[in-house]
Amino acid sequence: MDAIIKQHPALKAVDAGRKVSREEAEEAVRTLISYLGDCPNREGLKDTPKRVVNAYAELFAGYKQDPGAVLERVFEDVGGYQDIVLVQDIPFYSHCEHHMVPFHGKVHAAYYPTDGVVGLSKIGRVVDVFARRLQTQENLTTQIAEAIDDVLKPRGVAVLVEAEHMCMAMRGIKKSGVLTTTTRFTGLFAEDPAEQVRFISLVRGGQR
Ligand SMILES: Nc1nc2c(ncn2[C@@H]2O[C@H](COP(=O)(O)OP(=O)(O)OP(=O)(O)O)[C@@H](O)[C@H]2O)c(=O)[nH]1
Image (cartoon, rainbow, N blue to C red; front, side, top):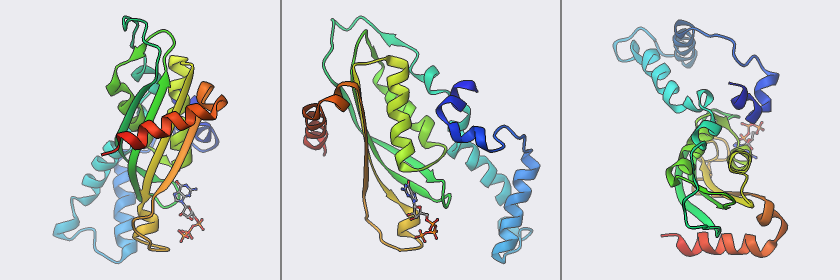
């Protein structure tokens, strides 16, 4: 839990860790249904609070996951490979912390290894650890990059996230198809703009 809080300073400020029972969570869903003007006891809705709480357990599973544990296993026997490792087009689904409405897109993440590499799937797992929390796109981008940086201690990390926000498509301004791009660079990538260009060229060149 400490590791999760370290990645999420905001959690310290609120009543993170307050135990809310499953019954309380289901009651909150029933309250919202009534607030909308529907009847939570009608046939079609009576099991909905249970389903919503089950769905939330899956959609927000990241609060219970530690990115450090995901990245723990390093493979050192890679023939001294030290060039860029880029994992791109990792799809993700998250929820914006402002409206609790989904945003989704792709993450492209690269690093220059120092003493080994991680399993490629682990980068996608780290994306999910952070995506499955209430997020902003900017924080998601930073948290993915910093987790890889903290645990692997590579020579540099580059993360680019591109996403569409349903809070802008389905409500409010109602503009669909708007893509937001965010980046976070550390180490070599932060120091050398040519490395950023190399990263972006590989990402754009590899997109299908
Ligand atoms: N920077 C950033 N903004 C986000 C993200 N997700 C949602 N938003 C924005 O958060 C803002 C919240 O603005 P508010 O004025 O507090 O809320 P609102 O009245 O619902 O705003 P509108 O969406 O403009 O109707 C909106 O402009 C959203 O587009 C995100 O990941 N990053």
